[in-house]
Image (tube, rainbow, N blue to C red; front, top):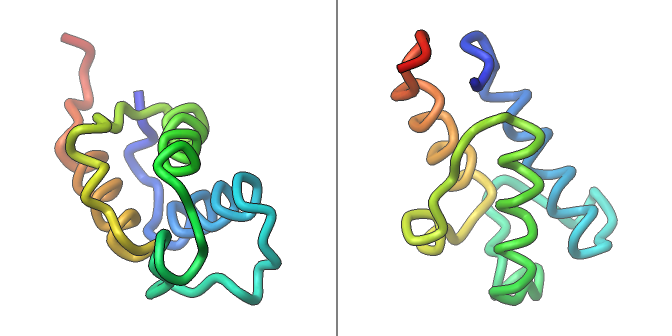
Length: 92
């Protein structure tokens, strides 16, 4: 279950760390508005790998069919925050 009190800043750090790990880029090259494909050179396989890492790190489900439209770090953070806020707090 995703943490209920996770901050936007913490999610951004997790996303940035996943990008650094998968793409091997220096942190200073990555900004909230960095576009994965155009600016950072990510491939669709890189994107899928980042989603798996983020699912594990944040204990949340990120459906590929929804997430594949994500273009920037900030967009990814917003997507994850919406998923966390929409997650039930009690197990079904």
